[in-house]
Length: 105
Image (cartoon, rainbow, N blue to C red; front, side, top):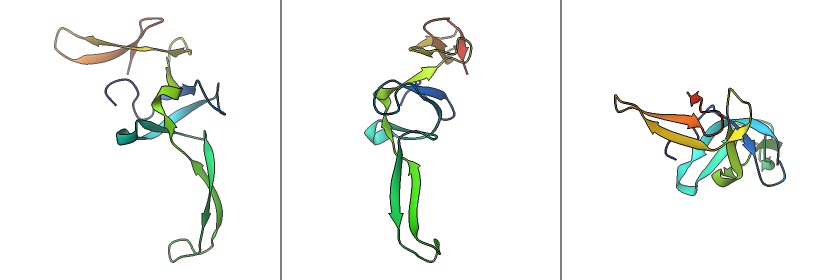
């Protein structure tokens, strides 16, 4: 995924059914360029009873979203923003907000 979106970043959905909602990134499916966002793009899964899951039933869980449908929310300006990359003098790469210029941890 490079440096654009990382685990535990806050993102906003910019396309699809959950457009305009914010959530925290739980994980990635790097081969498919998809992200899991907490509480968004929920799907229902039917489970049979098993040894691990004593009671079957229907559970709701997050389905992955394509990474082009989410934008990082800057912690300082609290707006969805594009992400810039800068290389510091010591050779370290950092992410920065294209709107306010703030360094994103």
